[in-house]
Amino acid sequence: MQNGIDVLILDHAGPGLVRVLEEMDIRVVTGARGSAREAVLHVARFLKERGA
Image (cartoon, rainbow, N blue to C red):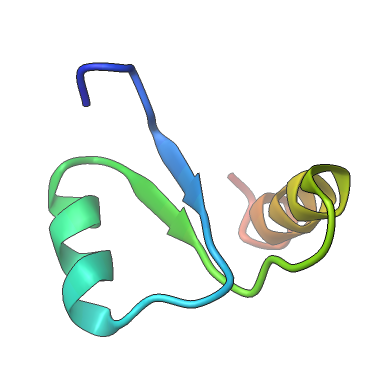
């Protein structure tokens, strides 16, 4: 939170971690793999699918 993070991109995360982060207003996107570029593209698709 001190660094202004509002989205966290992960390969996977348990429900407890997701809940805690979302309570801190940090959006969690799981399923990202590969390079940083591929992970960002994954997030873009994720957000587009959810209308965010």
